[in-house]
Structures are given as C-alpha cells and as structure tokens.
Image (cartoon, rainbow, N blue to C red; front, side, top):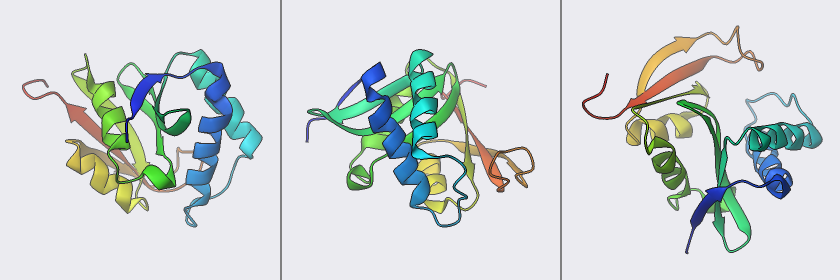
Length: 149
C-alpha cells in the first residue's frame, strides 16, 4: 500500500464528507445531527480554509485531517483503512513544525482515546458535553513536542 498525503482540493469535499458521514453513522451512541449534504458542505468550507490534508492510495481517499494551526477540527479514516497507519501518518504530518496540538473526542469513543494516547497525547480535561453540538461528554487531548511546554 503506497499512501500519499496531499492538501485537499475542492473536488475532495464529497469524498471526505462521505468519510465523515460514514464515520459518524458507524457509532450508534452518536446522534445524527447533519445530513450527508451538510457534511460535504462543512468539509468544503474546511478545504477552502486550507485546513485539510488527505491520505490517498491512487485516487482513493482513505482518510483526512482538518487542522487550523494547533487545533485539530477533524480526523477520519475509512473503515477499510483503519489499523493501516493512515491515522498515524495524518497526525504525524500535523505535528510537523508544531510544538503543540489540541483536539477533542467523545468519552464514548474508546478507540479514538486509545489511538490518541498511543500517539503521545495526554488527557487535559473532561466535560459533560453541555457546550458541544451533540451534548455528549467529551475529552480534550493535548500533544506537546518533547521538551516543550
């Protein structure tokens, strides 16, 4: 498997919106607040802002990360690519030139929690979900480059 990372293009919005919709639908604990069209529109906005990097094999988009400076807005990997290193590649790329990254995940998302801890993130805080759109308890994770505070 030869995976390349590249900046997302406007034509990728449908593919990454689909990854987002599929990833959200795969979790029965997560409320479905947005249509597939709304997910595509949101991804198009993130692409337009220059936040999105995609992981591709040939023309197949396997995953994406949306990062604004040191904040990770989204990280999704297709079901068929999970466990293949795509998520790690995207996170490693996001760490380049940064001393710190911050992200949120839901407390119900045990697989994501394990992944972020394996990738050097530490838990920073927990909330009851009152301020997120889904109203689900969540966790803030922080990654810091070694030797940086």
